[in-house]
Image (cartoon, rainbow, N blue to C red):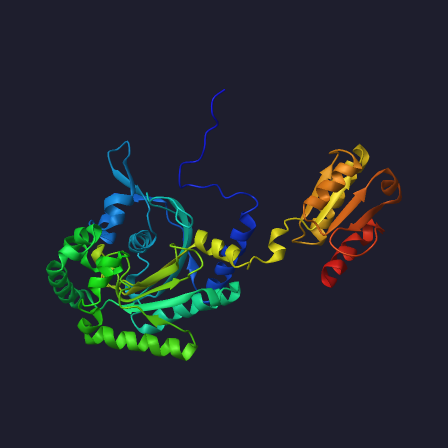
Length: 429
């Protein structure tokens, strides 16, 4: 007998027991974004490889090591998207959404793909919710994105477990001057750096600031500070952002080593981090990318956005015990029917109840075993009530209604009064 096939390493099934929490989280985010005036868009998961080389940067770890890239039958190089911003910008340009200086406030949700070493909270197929705004250049929109996420943490009950880190990268011109100063410093101390940092020194030196190696961090204590090289425009922008966060009561810390891993960021960068998930502590990250649209062939267009990892935030909710009890219940009412005539009546009765009580989660178990076995399934389903329809009930046009999650005796309820009875029970719950 052949061995059953399994999922690819780092690409996981999301099972029925897990999806209620995912739907709760996704629905909470969607409702929040609707309330702030953001509109959803959906992009393909496969793009031309050139898109990510141009946007992310050819010397980044993502492009060099992590992308899933292949040639299709036409000989085109295609890549499973490793992140969403580049694809969103491509779509905005292709469909003329940024023309005429019109503001676009967009969001998307879906899988991303990176060939990394899988571990808890980091997978090769992972899911993100991304938010992007175009044609707004002041700090107001940077603040709105951060305040929006702060509100989300409050809705989810996890504010005490996350911390906001902020930095400004300045404009590309100012950053180039800083880059030269940093490379000069790192070159002078190259023998004290870890191997990965020495490799990055010539290709992406700002990423050395993000090194986790203790020996490199010891050297960086004396490195030039990016804040000392900020241009006046970026400095004013950053001060405006901090003033707005202070006015909104959003706490933050300045992290001068926060640089983000993608080449296209400028000015504001931020991360929401937690110490509850081990090494995978970033749950939401983003910033400003004012030069990206032009870099990809469009007119100069301000842009800012963020992405949050669904797997990590779901894991954080579970770790903190912030999963609402009611979302684990997928059934409100479980209808047990015994005998063919009762099964036919159960079908008609269940559809009538769905008409009368929109949103009712009703499961029918018709003809599936003895009373004992059906009742055991009703209890296991998590339903609040079991409805019992046998020959005697059918003859009297009633159902037995038994509470499964609390006090109360079984009652006989007329079919005509059943919807009102269930609605009253729900109101009292």
